[in-house]
Image (cartoon, rainbow, N blue to C red; front, side):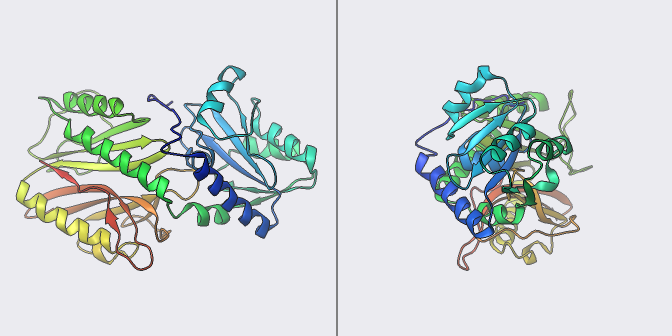
Length: 349
């Protein structure tokens, strides 16, 4: 469940931006012969629906229906009492409520076109119960996977999304800069407080408490003894856009050398050549519903190269003079042959 404030800003995410995204999706639907597009959302897979209509669920689940003609509407498992809130934070024609969202969505589509061709974004990730309800509610509907269609449209960031990612990166950076205190828990509490006060919808903090022993980031329960070098990672959501930022507490000179190598490696994305000397690395981004999907990295068997102009979050680990240095920051991939650029330099102390 989300713990931060979810509120729509018509300045940061204007109606015209959402309308333009819907128009692009509809054009692709017409080319593909689709009568409707379905996108599933819950608190772990919010990114597809939030990109199109601005809705981010605190909890529960819903299906967004984008007809080829007519306004998008949401079928939500949430009760009617949250209807006005959903309408306030979203750009929707209608909000329908039913605990069986698949059944209701299929019935709505079939009521106007019983033989409709329906594309489903991230079909493989759709819960089995909802898929069964779609078939029950619209037995004559033709269901197909529209993941590739949507990912091609979603993969490149528009100016509004870049601005939101930049704000999310600033919140993450400020949160990590505020991580002060005598204990690890004090640092985490201070970082989370700063992020909430800056308007983060969510922040998840993880730590590598002793880089001399283990560079993996963990969610901490209880207190941990900090090593001579350690690191914090903030995963922040703002207006539906997610980023990761890392702060390493280590030797400052080594940190500067690591930061320079990291920036050079990121600049070459989506080529992985720059990461050849790194211990490990990972690029995450959004193609459909998962806000930070692993796309390419040293430990991934399959690679999904991000599109030019995509927003990604990059993490990497580098060994310099016997010290292990984790790095991480969001980046914008270059367009038309331009180099990728970080949205903020990694933090060190």
